[in-house]
Image 1 (cartoon, rainbow, N blue to C red):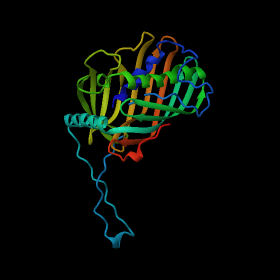
Image 2: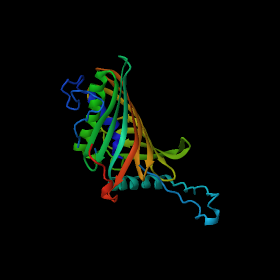
Image 3: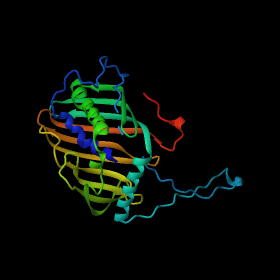
Image 4: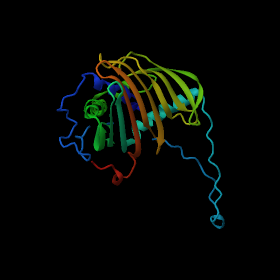
Length: 287
C-alpha cells in the first residue's frame, strides 16, 4: 500500500530544475527496446461461492446462481480490515510484473511526453524497468518521466516505508459517510497526518464497504518536498487483483517555480503477481 505515496515523492524530481544529459537512466541509443539499468521497487479479489455443482445430466444447460453478496461492514471494521489486508500484502507479495504507461504534460510550454515501460518488482527492494516506446518532447522524457522513475526507485531502495504507510501511526482517520465509486459502495474517511512530513498528505481515502480494500485516495501534500514545488494534488485509484490491491491510475498536478504547472497520469495494467507460496518455477525472470 505504500506506493500510494509514490505520487507525492515523484515531484521531488523537479527540485533541481533541468536534468543534465548524463542522466544515468537514459540509454545512449534511445531505441524503444532499451533496458533501463536495474533498479533495486518493493491486487485483491474476493472469490464468491457459486451454486452447488450441477449434476452431470444438467451440464448441457448450466444454470449458475448469482454471486452471494457480502455484508456491509461497519466503518471501524472496514478500517481494521484494510489494515489487515495491507499487512497481508506486505507479507505475501513476493514479486510482480506490470505494464506502466506515463503521460506527462507541461501546459505552460505545450510540451508533452508518453512513455510505456515494463515494470518488474521483487520484494523487498528490487525494481527494474524496460523501455517499450516513447513519443513526445525529449525534455519531458529526461526531466520529468525519467526522473520520476528514479524517484520511485530511490523510495523503494532507501526509504523507511513505515513512515509513509497509510496507517494509524501516521494518520488520524475520521469517518465521513458512505458513498459509491462506479457503483461500488465505499466508506469515506478524512485523513490528517500526525506529523508535517513531505511524504504525507491530507485528504480522503475510500475503502470498499464489503471488504475493506482501498479503492481511492486523494488529497494534497502537507509539506512540499522542495522549494521549487509550491503545491501537489493527486487522485489515485486502486483495483483488487489476485488477492492483492494495486494502483491502476494516478492523476497528479503540481505547481513548480521553474517549469510551471505539471500534470502526470500514470496507468498500471497487466499485473502478474507472485506470492511467496507460489511454486518457484513460476517466479518472475529477470528482464
